[in-house]
Amino acid sequence: MTVAVETPYDELSWTGVETSFSPDFTTDDVDDVVVSFRDGNGVVTVLVADTHYSIVLLVTKKPLVTPIAMPAAPGTVLFERVTPALQDAPFDDLGDFSLAKIESLFDDGVRRDQELMHGVAEAREIAESLVEDATAAAAVVASGYADDAAGSASVAAGSARAAAISAGEAAGSASSALLAKAAAESARDAALTAFDDFDDRYLGAFAAAPATDNDGDPLVAGALYFDTVREAMLIYTGSAWVAAYVSGGGFLAAVNNLADVLSVPAALSNLGLGNVDNTSDADKPVSTAQVAAIAAAKSEVIGGATTAADTLGKAEALLGAKLGADFSVLPELLSPTGSELLAVSDGENSKRIGIGTLVGLASGGGMVLPDAIIKDQKATGVAGQLLTAGVYVKRDLNTVVRNIDGCVSLSSSQITFNASGFVHFLSPAYGCNRHRAALYDVTNGSYVMYGSSEFSSEQSSSEGIVAVLSGHVYELRHRAQVTSYGGVETNDGNNNVYSRVYFWKS
Image 1: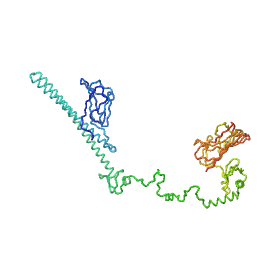
Image 2 (image 1 turned 180 degrees about the horizontal axis):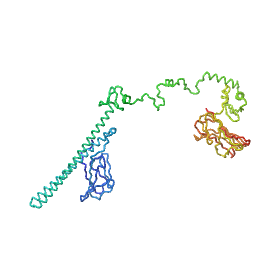
Image 3 (image 1 turned 180 degrees about the vertical axis):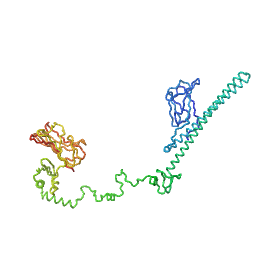
């Protein structure tokens, strides 16, 4: 209980300059405080909150009253606490058990008792004052004035009646105090019931699992007890006691990123990765089978050649033998360091392949065709699109002629690759002077490859080879020095083909 011994009534002077009042009593609700004003003639007026004044509770639960539109000074401001006898407390819901609410109800009961005692004291003072007045008046009358005595007797009778009325009011206040006491006892009983329910939920500490609750009643699901032998909290499921929580002491922490694995070799073995060798690429060993295959391929492809040109010539002859008349082989020595590439075409499919690829051809692998072919196909007599001078223009791509496993999709001249890999693009231009094609990654907003620089007084193609990423969207773009067309048309009744993109999945 937090309520001190106090009087639920206070009077403070109002001279017109006070900025706030703090009556010397506590309350839980500002609505329980009645504020009145008594002027110099003794007339009392009840003031209205938020019209004549505003009121809040301090941390000490004492009210703080601030004037807004007070009556004319001077006068006296009267403060009286009137705690309701009926308190709203939801004890029917035992899940809402609150010791703070119980304490608040006891505090309100004490405040109500103080107010009743104050009312009784005021009634007693009034009655005693009236009796004293009547006695004094009777003494004056007894001095010799019979008529006045009779009048005084009448006044005394009236005073007695007033005293009786006051006594009746005091009795009513006493009755209210009894009601408040009954409410407090009811709150106490509800608190005890709530505690009993809690006691049925948490049973306490035991060395063995209890079979009933603390009242000897059957266990309910959700009941808890602390096992002093296992040193753990257990919960009842409705049929068995199980651990209420599991320690994470032996778990791997996500923030450690597997750094807290107890044994790395054991973990690798358990995952079936015991034979994985985590050495650098330069230090990785080559298997016996790989060494034999490389030696055989080198012997067949290179054939004892001692120069890059000799190696390329032998590779060209081997490739021609493997591919027959279906492909024409165009040797192209890109550098004197041995990083040779062959450009291979069948008129529709085109690919640059390295000498390493010839190893697969030599061992019977055959030519690997593109997984997808996308091109700009226009009707006979229709030239390639117009290329505006000085800017990169998105090239038309409107036809998919090969698409293994749906590895690409085409929309509005934009290609979406559904797998990572490499592309080879060719983009023709006619009469544009200097020109260059480029592959643009729309997803990342950047160019990933600028093609070869070309000069076209008539027609030539800019091309390039670059890796692409799965899920990204790409455009083929072209920049020309002079505004002209992206390819010259034919009128032989067949479709014209201009820009082309070839894709190989990695």
